Image 1: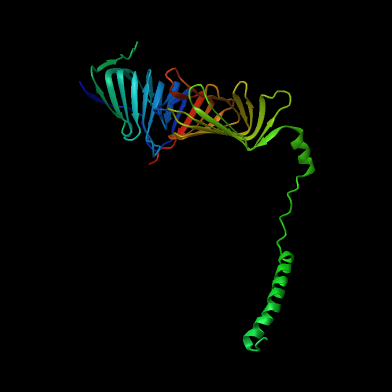
Image 2 (image 1 turned 180 degrees about the vertical axis):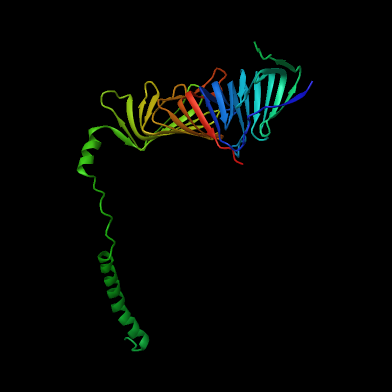
Amino acid sequence: AQTDIALGGIQADSSAPVEITADSLSVDQETGIAAFSGNVLITQGELRLSAGSVEVVYDDDSGDITRLIASGGVTFVTATDAAEAQTAVYDLADNTLNMTGDVLITQGRSAIAADSMRVNLATGKAQLDGRVRTTLTQQDNN
Amino acid sequence: MSADNAYSRFVNWAKIILPLAALVLLSTLFLLARTTGDTTEIPFADLQEITSQQRISAPTISGVTNSGDAYQISADVAKFSQEDTDQIQIDSIAITINSATGTDIDLIAGTGEYDSAERMVALRNLVRITTTNGYVMETIGAWANLGTGDIETTGILEVRSPFGEFSAGHLSISRDESGAQQMVFNEGVRLVYEPQP
């Protein structure tokens, strides 16, 4: 099943500076793979993505970061919503965030679970796949 | 006897003039000689310092670490300390470590102390570490262990990397068990990346 939702509060402009803070960064000299680890926090404008470890995929000659592959439990927080998953790939090139592995999105009072979610950060549109289940918590009006 | 014709007269005159000219030429040779360069006087104070300790100028020390990386230490001046002959004080030290598999690492520092017994080099006053895969790091101090080829910084670092600039609390470059050379920045890393439009 595939449903589309709108994640509010996203004004991710892909030209805002990306700040990554972590406990450590290890670089394998032979393969050149650079990976942040230890409560990694990626912030760009309003977006905040925290993860256990994040691998940086960059273009060698231009030095542009093309993708950030986060794993080890990822939480993605916008101004109004929050989403959790096991892994996420933040693609800076086409400004999308692809979260996979029992995704849980909390929007206000409702919570939506799915297998994977693909968010277009420019528009805030999110597309959920897999067993999508929505739970609405009743307004307890007593 | 001498036929009095022009040619003979010319020859007789030549016999007198040419030797005289030669003599004049020869004598001026030494008058116009260039003065030799002034001798380089060494100021007496330096002399005192130079003779007071053993020192080598522009030394190079080269060798191989246990994991097969060839290293070379070069410097302006190396001075041996009196008490412990293993200790060598080196001014403006440069170390190059060419590793067989991984990338090469260059370290330069204001001063260095090389302990030949321990094969350890302590680097101080603005250490810059450059690796061939595009990392340039600057810190205030570092240790280079020429036995294992490991490098450890003692101060916080500013790093320029292929994907942006970041600061880190500490860096250690070493080989993991599989022999791959790892650079680990820890004690807090902060990268700010400006995406090009």
